[in-house]
Length: 145
Image (cartoon, rainbow, N blue to C red; front, side, top):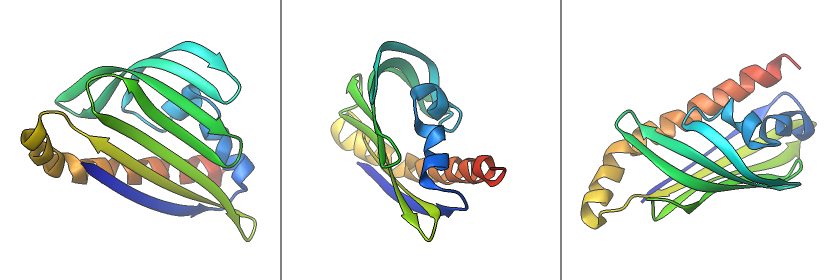
């Protein structure tokens, strides 16, 4: 199982930061691993999406994802149907001194038992690098606000 958690503080309000998480289309600008996302269902606070996940350069898989949001507080992208036993990215938003504090947690469990566990150890540093790149991109996007 791959489990990673990072946090950062942005020089904007949680409302301004959350604009990049309002829907899957906005999230796709940050998460480059979501390829060809097609919305199957959309309502306030919930989107069901069919997409291809690209975990590494050699791992691509089709999945149905659920994207839930609570404005300015929380966003979660979770696999509901697909090849992975578990795939979840959660984003929590809070305010500290007028600035947005964002905490990101990723939980990915690969199939294939012990082989999946070993593969998880190998790709875990790459997942953490992706998280850092996403937060850096978010910092750049919100710095101009």
